[in-house]
Length: 296
Image 1: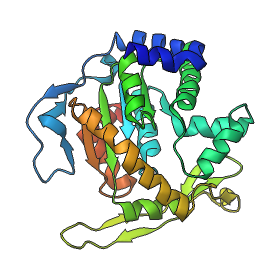
Image 2 (image 1 turned 90 degrees about the vertical axis):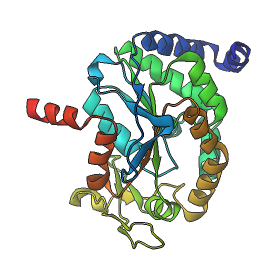
Image 3 (image 1 turned 45 degrees about the vertical axis):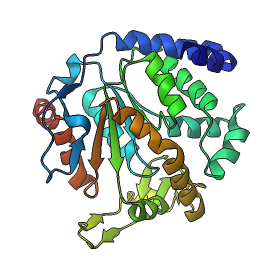
Image 4 (image 1 turned 90 degrees about the horizontal axis):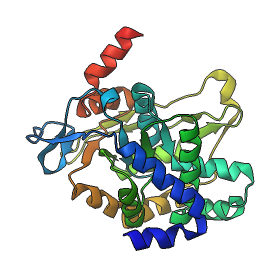
């Protein structure tokens, strides 16, 4: 492992070595977030691997270091962002880092444009370089802990991350593929404020023993409506290719963490109103949110 890390870090020796120091130092104060308990009952929309469950310890007493996994468009950013606000830790989305680099016209911009438009995965070296830069900026601001969204996506990235920090928990969001495709094709961005919306109104009937699912559109305010644009990579061809690549290269990452007993499988039962309370319950944070709301 050490030799692999050394070889990989050479093109970005300064930024990657900083990434290693940062996450290693922050992990020293992490408390374990997983404890052995009994499996959840079959009726539960979420299941723990290897009969593990989260301990109900105050999040402020355990430096949160979580990873969100799931297919493109499943909602990793939405739920990771909400948890980031609730727990007071940074939400670091590698997709956002890539888009920021694209908009900056920096040295990687042209290369990234070709990769993203073809629906391919960005290389480990580029992602690590961007992530290292983000962590360095966060350390300067005094950030502690993180919720990673979009990293790791490959076994190689997972091994690199494991070599430099202890991940407390990996949340694996799951959604049926036909709904994922419809959801991705409905994504829109306001060209003025940069906020994300979704115009898709999803209503899938239950069949073959599978429950139905409804997701209301996430519409923008009236002043953003005329400024909505579609991401260049949100076409049916590109989205389908992204899902294929995810299934081929990223799903083994799920098994990587599953074998370590760190993964929480969470099947989204619907849109945010239906899924958010269930996710908080799965994370043992339902009481915590109530306390935060009462204190506000």
